[in-house]
Length: 216
Image (cartoon, rainbow, N blue to C red; front, side, top):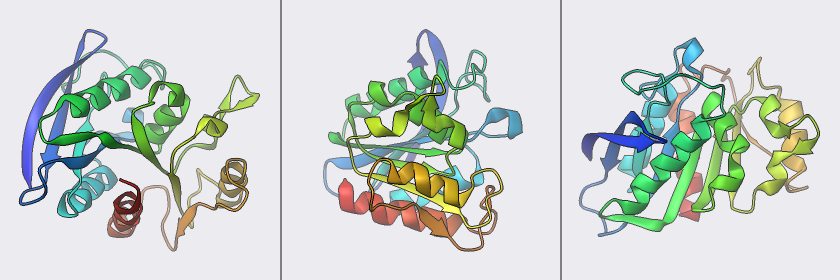
């Protein structure tokens, strides 16, 4: 794989990221933007789950852009609790759309925890996304104005993944939310894992790869 550190703009702010492209593959790669967990709890593009997913996707022929949201690491600005971060995701997608060797028609969004929340909150902005993967999505992110379910806006193939022992995302409640999109769809539940995914990074990464290989 080829890795390059990049700086890109989001509403005038400079954000840092790492773009990884496979080697020895077709001329145009499918690609995914990877969104990290909450910075208040140490979340960044170097998170264990994000890095594991990036590595697994790269080895499977899918390019990735993992980046730090505003106010994280060397990225400029301040956290806005999943509001302006939606524009950061959109900016990252635009980078992939313009990047040489990337197939702009085969882009996915992958978010973990806070990253999944940002994606769900900004769904209407991400029309270029051909697939979604939401890992341990906070249940609060399924509601807008406490009434309207945002997940009903999903019109592309999607996968929800949760750990069996996640104390922050109740498996039963997540199943109910996912069923509101597709009555016969359920989230992928990884045995033994909790919200941190420590020791289960490979399992969740393989799950993401298997899904995106089918839909990108």
